[in-house]
Image (cartoon, rainbow over all chains, first blue to last red; front, side):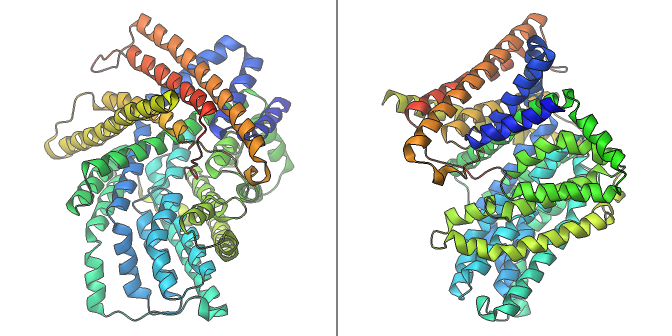
Length: 430
Length: 163
């Protein structure tokens, strides 16, 4: 127990000193395991972890989904999604903000990254909202929050990583994210309604579109809708594995962008490099976390903690609730992926022991990551918007996001209390 | 000057390697799955080829991430620190990263040697794995070198994260 606690302490110390988290985790894991287990075995073990993570067929799902998102983003699809959503909801109060949530949900069905979704939508949605006189706090709040739909609505980088680390079925995890993702979108739209009810000037209504205009706008997005249906439908229906689906998705997105004349060889190269870099960054964290996990699993901590918690005789749901509370608090200051990977070796065995479904826990994990991504002071989505929208002070962005944090916390409690919301759809999969 | 030129060369080389490998995985998966579902003929050994290409994507991508300072760091304390303190901090952190990566490069070199000695190959196509593990080691060493270069020419670019 003590060894593991020292290990966690060392990681936080190194992180504060600005050592990249991946290196901090790998370093502490290596030294810790070396001291406990002896150096030759530890060195061989570390080499094996790195080798296996490199030569892993199933892990190719990660770069392929990243690639798919990047191709579609470059094809300028976000603009059309936003336009289509606007024709339906633009005429209500806060209509552009509602359209932003819907467009984010649509974009989230192609893109597995919250930051990429928020960054893409900020270029499309913010200028429109600015033009119509929306308050900055509302427009930035809704873009930051909407961006997090990227990781709940499948595909999702976080769910893929969670699936790999805990050996949970990725297709089922994706299916599990659909309804909670829609719930999150509904909650966010509820927050928009509340904000524009309290402050009607923050989000004036736009013009009503005719059904003809709606039909034209929808026609612009059918190609991608088809791609999403093919990829996710194929994975859910058992036609493809997640990896195969990701490959089909990336290729489809490539042809889609090509058909829209969005690609030159130079642009393709840039997209490939960008995707490769994101992949390398993710894998560095993954390898670091696995090295740390093998250290933690060698200590008595997971067992001790499990015994202690089970001994308390608390209701199982209260235990998971307490974990979620820890995540929400940690998420305000920590980078979310590292937070999840650091804690999985300790939390996951307890959750399984309590008899909960790992798929449901995965969805809860995504929800706390979503909350972490938009909660000040250290919410990555907020910083991305701050970097992209030069005219908006960070204080405005912080001010607008609180209600959306609250909306997601409500969604978290709902999924916590009502597991079928996550587990109903994957129940249909073999 | 020499450091800047070296940085550019490394960036160009690794970019070409990682981009080609990733594009390769995409096409390979498309042809393999398409072939299997449509004409019941898959690419022999496509799984293994994907694995070998993944090694290139990840490990050729690594120097690029380091070059641009895109590793995920906890940087909320930055505004509180003086410029001089931050430079010193960057110096120490880059040295530490370089040392860690050099260690990994050495571990993988030893592993590659063992695998070559045992004659480890992929299951279906019998492609020797040793050279690829040597390449992993080499690219980790390159990344260590990148961090040493950064000690002399720090980067200012930062990436928000991966989620």
